[in-house]
Amino acid sequence: MSQHQLEVLIRSRIPLIVIETHEENQAVAMVTGMRQVLQRPIFKWSLTEGFERVDQQMAPQKLFAKPADALAHIKSVRVPGVYILADFHPFMDDPMHVRLLKDIALSADQLGHTVIMISHELAIPVEIRKLTAKLDLSLPDRVELEQIVREEARQWARESGKKVQTDPETLGMLVNHLVGVSRTDAQRLARNAIYDDGAITQSDIPAVTQAKYQLLSDDGNLHFEYDTAKFSDIAGFTRLKQWLNERQPFFTESGYHSHLPTPKGVLLLGVQGCGKSLAAKAVAGAWQVPLLRMDFGSLYDKYYGETEKNLRDALKTAEVMSPCVLWLDEIEKGIVSGSDDSGPAKRVLGTLLTWMAEKKAAVFLVATANDIKALPPELVRKGRFDEIFFVDLPNEQVRFSIFDIHLKRLKLDPTQFDFSRLVACSEGFSGAEIEQAVVSAYYSAHAQYSPLNQALLIDALRKTQPLSVVMDHQIDQLRHWAADRTVPCD
Image (cartoon, rainbow, N blue to C red; front, top):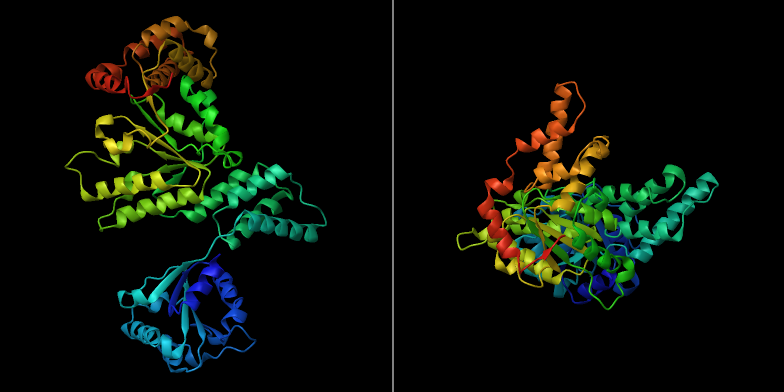
């Protein structure tokens, strides 16, 4: 696809073309692969080698190694040609270089030259912006990625004399997790998976996913959560678990061809400490996909437009990591409602809403919020999320399960405790408050050189002032708002 787009640009007589990529060899090969179509000599320039003709075998000529000399030479040549400038980005700040590029572009009808600048990143000066087109080098699709993996497997077989062990399902999983990386990176990741033990197994997938994320994100706005959770580790959330189980098949590869849309995401609204964050982790764990957490605090930048760019870059990374779960924790702290909010906050909201409406990639959004009043109505209106779930304080049955989980986690025998009394004493407690009470009682037991017992646990509960008492008015307001607008998690 990229080669066809490049051919269209050249035939349209666009004089300056920019290709931003780390794969210089791939980009040069794409240009030279068009020599029969272009019917023009193709030259490549670099600071170290000067000019060399790449459509024929000719030795480099270092006579024009300096950037100004190279551009002046192109300007002086009367035979139409294609000129590739490799890593020209450091020289775009020089007015002489910009002027020479502009001269070449303005004389394109007479000279017939096309200048292609290949670099990992290149800022186009305003003087030549309207004379320039930018082309993105397409990433390998699943068919090409599978060919890359198979070639790495053949290479390992040639070296070791053994066949790589795998199965079609695991091979398909590896290929899916390589989508979004360059050919070079795909080769390296596939090689790492194979050369470790001569097999492609499901245990290789997490390492590939983590390495892929490290390649894609270095801005700190998006965090890869290595430790996801299981719904078996979470008490309650019965309706949410059922809702997610029903939609899981439509979020996988098999669901892409269904007439039903891919699930978009959920908003988990509720009381602090009741397990919203743990539920977000459990979605990724249950669906066996990567979990990415958005850090809204690091998005904001003092320079105009940079904040939205940071958000777009983070969302782009999430799309490349798809299928994945994108967790927007305490979203109300990053997107403020009201007329007094700052310009960047409004633009961030607009950028996020546009992405939510237009995204095609399998990115399941899980947003958590404690304060519905701080959220703009545009975000919570019907259709933005598939569903809004309300996470209330745990009921008696859920509190029973919470005690059971935390006591077993401390390797204690739950049968030694009176759960009915514990449940009664923890009325109005959140899951986090119950956990903290268990931990506090354990510390007390350790200080007294005794095992954790019922009396210590009851004492810890009685010493705790739950949030439902401290902030009873705010919680009542939240419950009132959610009564007929959300779905209870339990």
